[in-house]
Length: 321
Image (cartoon, rainbow, N blue to C red):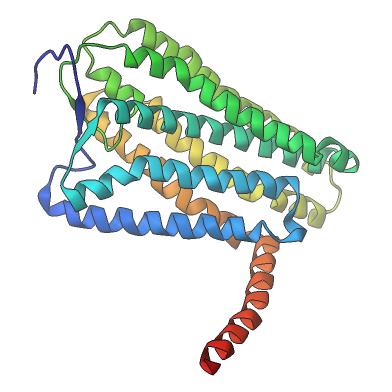
């Protein structure tokens, strides 16, 4: 496969491991994680339907759950298909779509987290103006802007890579189509794309949302330290601890995935960071928000309490039949 391919119709996805003895354990682990991701994030979406949770924070949390499920579906499905159907190939068009969707969803995810950080800043630092500043219209505008900007940011990369006509190999050393692994196997001049990836990809798509989130927490920490009572400081910190935990987890994996040197010895570590980013983080998000959040747990209990009488009535109805 080490030939110059002037026209390429498909790629071969290397996967997480080439060891045939590990394929079944990997499949079962990924399947289990994916099912937990779906169940956990759907649970969060159901909890957000409670009228008491119709607030900006849970509006953005619902969007985060949708993004987590979408990102995991886009990236992990090939691992499952590979084991079930034994197919390691992906068409050129499908690879470009997957690459664009993953980059866009990841970018939107970071922007939504920055918007959530701004929401926590207003709630703690400007509590008297919270409902005026974070109105439903502003929240919808913020979320819509995150989606539009996130998808537009990745478009130049996809357009450039779609124009590549020469590849050293059609095997991608990854478990899904990502920009960097695809760029590494191209024999086209990638200097402009590498510069664009450094400036727009890393600085605009990753570092800018990080700095916005970091700035929000600088003001939040400053306000918390100004609270006189220890119970007040603890309560204020508790309201943003879940979001801060998710932010730290996600940015740690992204920095490990994209900011470590592109050496052959680090490729497997980059793959592990990518797996943690696309599987573990979406799995941990609902656990962090549900286990640490009394409002979410209360909403789920209320929903379950309302569902039990309906189930009992349905059971009596079917028994009478």
